[in-house]
Length: 66
Image (cartoon, rainbow, N blue to C red):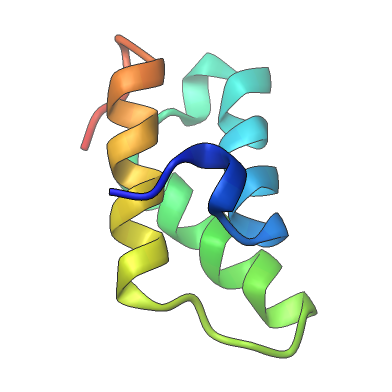
């Protein structure tokens, strides 16, 4: 899995959004943020970035629901 610092900006922002609100710490919410923020950059979230973001969230947030 990728380290946080190597993720694209849209993925970092998605993870930080979950950091701000524990009620949003679900895999579905992370996916929606990844898709929405990637779209603002004119791209789609690739599977590797998505998997890395999920892995980081599952390690960073004990209450993350995959």
